[in-house]
Amino acid sequence: MRILIAGGGIAGLTAALALLRRGVEVQVLEQAHELREVGAGVQVSANGMRVFADLGIAEEVLALAARPSHREVRLWNTGQAWVSFDLGAASLARYGQPYVTLYRPDLVAVLESAVRRADPGCIRLGQRAIGCGQSSGAAMLRLADGSVVEGDALIGADGIHSAIRAQLHGASEAEFTGCVAWRGVIPTEALPAHLALPIAANWVGPGRHMVHYPLRGGALTNVVGVVEREDWLDEGWTTPGTHPDMLADFAGWHADVQSLIHAIPQPFLWALKLRRPLPRWTEGRITLLGDACHPTLPFMAQGAVMAIEDGLVLARALTDIAEVPLALRAYEAARHERTTRVVEGSAANTRRYHNPILGDPARAAAHVEQELAAAPAMERFDWLYRYDATTSPIPTP
Ligand SMILES: Cc1cc2nc3c(=O)[nH]c(=O)nc-3n(C[C@H](O)[C@H](O)[C@H](O)COP(=O)(O)OP(=O)(O)OC[C@H]3O[C@@H](n4cnc5c(N)ncnc54)[C@H](O)[C@@H]3O)c2cc1C
Image 1 (cartoon, rainbow, N blue to C red):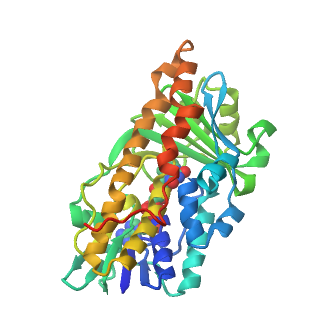
Image 2: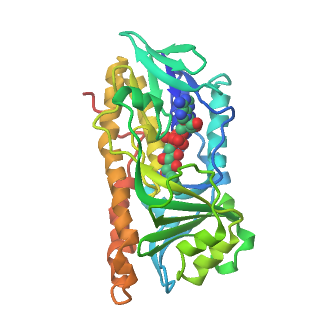
Image 3: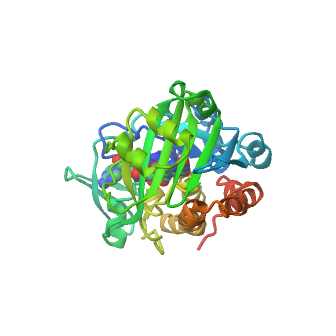
């Protein structure tokens, strides 16, 4: 069996590694001339680490990760803090895996080198997919240089603007969510000691929130601030913004938030876009995974983790079920409900994090305690973190 994967992001590389480890021939066709990730952070919860353990890369990931002890919610103006849940010992005890935070280029480097170790020729760079097709026995990927590559199945892992998705399900624009995100990575030594602790913090306030957490064993600190505003539509991850503009977006927020913004060497901002969940992903020998089929707002920190789970379940389906179109439909059936729940849950968190009640001193603390602090949060996420992509049922349609 030979599987084609369009796109070498976190989704495509994880799927490739899972397939290679099962002895399947894989070709990853990536448009970029080198595999690069934007210099930002990504959180990988226990359900994602379970996949990395199965793929034999957990040790490498842990060596580069940071392991925050807990997550706290902080109120935008007073700085009042609540422990929302324990990410360290409790994650290990409850879910058998740690909750880690990673610098994206580090994660992609681990995935890339594991794929290249398994098959040095697996990744082909500078290959832009422009379309696809299929016959009863093969899937075809058309590339921008005019060539056509053939395999038993084609997986579109080409992100939110997926060319494969557009061809299978019709071209459409991703919709602006009304939220703009700021990001920056700070050398932690530039921060005051109380902001350099190994904690993942989520500041919440009316119409905006800010998240920060350690990367690379604490050497770096990732900051993402999300603001409801309508005047910025550029979705490039590398468009620079200015400190005065970012400070204006968080005017009146706690001194710690101001310190974080001042310490960012270069803030970037981009418009958060989204698509409605597709009713189906698969067409015969072609399917989608990761952001290509379920782009997700980052408000549950699960978009990449869903892509990671997708990759393993897809590889299991393709190796357990002999007929390729059936295997792809089984993969979709196994993943559709869960990923849709994450897409919808992430969007629903906008209201929790940005609730106007947070501007009312009489009601703000009660909102945090009810919606975001310890017990309800842990229960709310149990279904998410307990999921085991290595054993979850793959129902044959
Ligand atoms: C601010 C922010 C914070 C986030 N934080 C988290 C987090 O903490 N935890 C988490 O789990 N998720 C997080 N996410 C979500 C996560 O980043 C994405 O879900 C994840 O990166 C999707 O991976 P992907 O491989 O599907 O897509 P992408 O990362 O977009 O990769 C797609 C790849 O396909 C390539 N490609 C595109 N078009 C073509 C083409 N035509 N031909 C060939 N190649 C092509 C691209 O070059 C790229 O390499 C966050 C997202 C944002 C915006």
